[in-house]
Image (cartoon, rainbow, N blue to C red):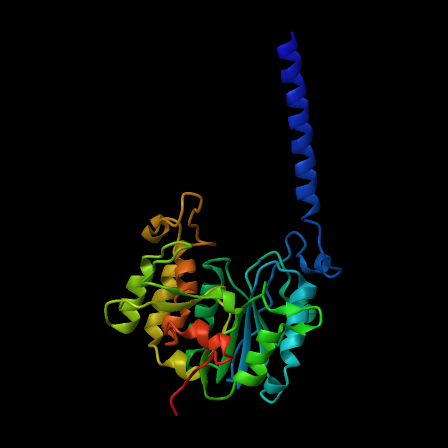
Length: 309
């Protein structure tokens, strides 16, 4: 009888804990800003608004959006617009929305974007960047910032010091590539090998891009997919390279790439493919800024790789 009582008590406590956890989880889904309610489409509403990119600009800021806090993202865009070193280029804000439930027209207004387009939720932010490059390869901006909407490097008062310093003091028209992440997000991989996890496809990516075996000595990697790159660096690679990478990063669930193993707890899916994490670690190689001293140079506030004149 005593055992029966203990079991009943345990089940009551467990059930109560589960209910409390679910309520806490549900409360976390509440909108965190005053504008979010207006973003979501009503049932049977069609998200039909898509702007066209028909001209080249001096400077584009490309943001991959899904469901990040609107006020936070709008603040980030305002900070970028107010960087004095960028103002002279009149940067164009291009937002790719990967959430079909969100109203593009409302999102464009709230973010004060110049161009907005809807994309399928495939391939993480890497697919967004590759799509933009492919569609605009021959009219790509002189320089482009590629960024996730859940960006790192902003504060309540403006861009973080390291971020602002790179745009205000380290950027000029000769910059070919520059990571826009904190220094602790820049590290060195040894042909796909790293203490935090191995990405063997990086070896194949190196061979494809560099036409050589991956050499010893390490390759710089900047996490999070947040960087600035020039038109010259983008067009130094054939368009077919970007198309091939895009096909792989957006592959359906039956593709053999999804069988690559990252860990026992990670399942590769079309919206979050393991190859997307490989691409995140390959931008430095793709845009030829992968020497292992990148972290140290960024510490010295010399974070850019420059185009040849």
